Length: 115
Picture 1 (cartoon, rainbow, N blue to C red):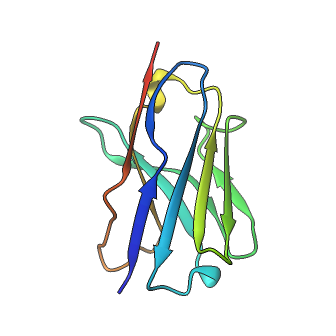
Picture 2 (picture 1 turned 90 degrees about the vertical axis):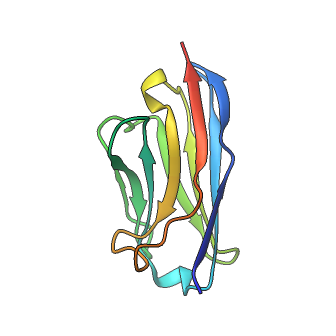
């Protein structure tokens, strides 16, 4: 049974940094293309960054140069280093794979960036 547990969120001032972590279980993590998504209050969930099983990465234009996605297959963890945070980065961050896990989403981790 798939389980994704996001952590590392918090409240920071603009320009600050946070490192998010997603602990996965119940899946063959190493072979999965994984991604970070975020949902701002009142908005649709959007793709932030992704990383393939071979380590190729994708970033939304809004976070390029500021966020870095990585993975540790041995520990089944997906990571997101977020630097130079902006108020528009505020939201709840989730990890998942682009094709989903049958509609499953973890509880997410909240990020609040103040100006």
